[in-house]
Length: 214
Image (cartoon, rainbow, N blue to C red):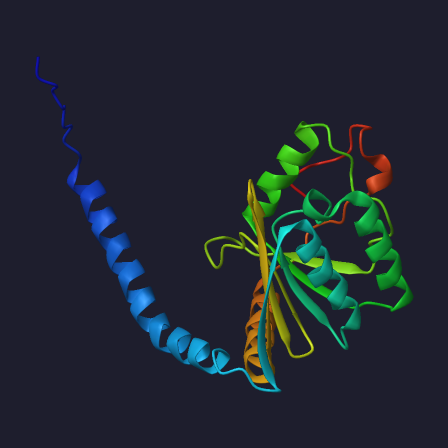
């Protein structure tokens, strides 16, 4: 017997959309490539003022996160998941207490990915994060502008990338003043484009007033 494959015709509008999207992606890649090449060429040259450090596993991510306590000035960050998901609630609560002692000033940007995670978090029976997060200022930005699908911190002369999903858990710290300054400028631009959403009243969670889309 011979296997048959059925091919279904699609509309011209759909094909045009796919072609335009591919062209847009190719254009974006072409425009970004020179900057990325220059950036990695600089970062590849390890000096006293330039260093790239790799971390793996939960303990590696905890080490990276603890480093942010040395932040001077605004702590700029992008979020797509709760820290509790990878660091554990006890560690996060301790981190929260240390941030309060240091009077942290935070600018946090998140997009639609954060909503999807929160819905999953509470739907699977997880508790809301403990601690006092009243100092943590967050703003939402639409994925039509930028898609935030991993955690990233920018502070001092450091840019830190974190990623965890399934078996993949790793992070990278880039110590480079020029690269950090550039990322701070990008974050500040996005911060102005983003908008603030109503804060969550954690004390009312479970009493019919919590909206996971907030």
